[in-house]
Image 1 (cartoon, rainbow, N blue to C red):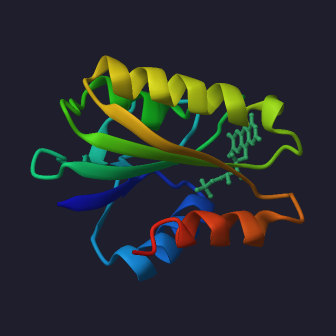
Image 2: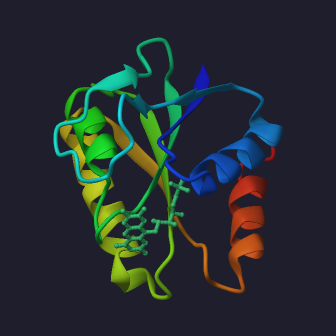
Image 3: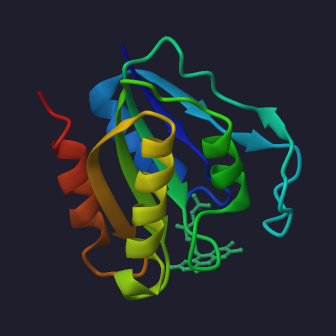
Length: 145
Ligand SMILES: Cc1cc2nc3c(=O)[nH]c(=O)nc-3n(C[C@H](O)[C@H](O)[C@H](O)COP(=O)(O)O)c2cc1C
């Protein structure tokens, strides 16, 4: 069974997740902290998706400060993905992938693997790039059967 799990502070990552889910039609679960302040280093969760019953997860997050937000990082340190396939996507704003996108995806991959997950697709969506809609479309259509 598949699920989409995201953290989205300002809605961009959620928008991509909703588009993917127009194709996938699966559970869309949000990681929600009690407080959205990005400076909180040890966030407490209002909603913390339980992924036990899923074997394929599409995991989305924004980039904060050239890396994963504390919310995503903390969630990933507390969640096991043993044997599950986990596709990753991030949304970010700065114009070049090397300004946060690539290293954030690499860290996400490492953290998921530390928790026993098998990383599948890895996608970086640059919100400022003219190709944004096309990149989202490419990602979405990669889930078309
Ligand atoms: C506190 C904060 C820090 C950010 N730091 C970066 C960054 O280092 N690199 C980058 O490309 N975008 C950065 N951004 C932009 C977000 O990654 C981008 O707008 C993303 O699409 C937001 O996703 P969301 O709307 O799902 O929260 C930052 C945004 C915030 C609020």
